[in-house]
Amino acid sequence: MGASAAAAAKPGALIAEGEPMVTLPFENGDRPLVQYPQKRPLIRHTSRPPQLETPFEVFNDGLLTPNAAFFVRYHLTVSPPSPALLEPDKYLLEIKGSVGKPISYSVAALQQAFPTTEVVAVNQCSGNSRGFFTPRVPGGQLGNGAMGCARWRGVRLADVLQAAEPKAEVRQALFNGLDRPLLPASPDFIKALDIDVALAPEPILAWEMNGEALPWLNGYPLRLVVPGYYGTYWVKHVNEITLVDQSYQGFYMNPAYRIPDDPCAHVEPGTTPKKTVPIQRLNVRSFITSLGNGTKVKMGETIRVRGIAFDGGGGIEEILFSPDPRQGWQVGRLGESLGKFAFREWTVDWTPKRTGLHELRVKATNRLGESQPLEPLWNPAGYMRNVVESVSVLAV
Image 1 (cartoon, rainbow, N blue to C red):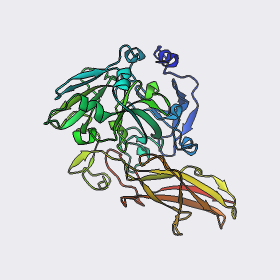
Image 2: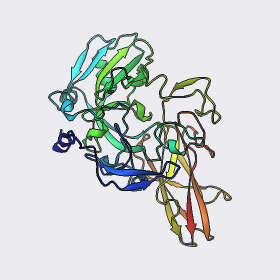
Image 3: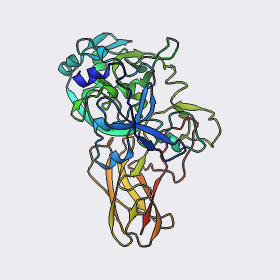
Image 4: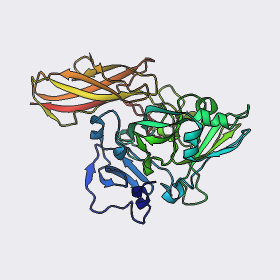
């Protein structure tokens, strides 16, 4: 681990003084902008554990979110783990449980034992945009910045699991990391993937992010990457994989991180779902990134509106743009594809034809025909918001 990560372990390293503030676009008010180790100033929602949101303007700078700007989400108080636990001579990944050959690897041993692979994929927190839910729901009141897209490099999870010789009765793989709860009675953060998902080609055990070692706050030295799935499954500092022959019912699988058992994961506001299932794949989302609420534009002057779209791996097929709810939609242009799990750039040329406010909207559709609702859908956990987003600009 580099000197910057080692320095981060000193007492007080996660505390900043004289923090600038940012006003969030909903009732939650102000939040501090804080610069943590290996990070640029990010929006801090909590300090213990650190919950850091990416300022939204970052997403207009490119399809890959810089490591220093990538959001941070932890669940347990003793997080992130001390760098002393992550040094190469101490860190081991253990594969155990219902296997014929329990085995452990250092990161260096993984790199030598298996072919490397990489994938560009979006990591999005399940509660991204929770702060916009009406009625309000409990949990971190995030804006739209608890997401990011990076190029992840490592080894296929399936290769590692197969080396441990899974037994025929295996149903799930459980993943645990080195972060820990403060009190012994608190549940540890353990996630489960069905074995067919774990053995699919896409999930990887990654040690690299955008061409560099994972930042301390994003899972150094090794994290699980599950392309197309919400970030709750992307376990950081992963050091234990246990194969089991039954469905795991730990806290962070049940009752946490569950959604209404409905195609759109919603119920009527204020009600409780009759049945729930674990959250899994990302739904379709799109954003305008080049313009913010209150931006002034010149009437009669053509501007290029830009944004991003993504989904759970179906791949973005179409972008529709509307400059006003009273007008129809026009088809946008899709830009470079970095893969079906990545942010996809879109652009459209727009000429304001009147002065005054314009409510710009964007709507994405993927190759499976899945799209976005015009009205927000509600659920009691505040998960999976993917309403058609709008930005109000003023033509003068």
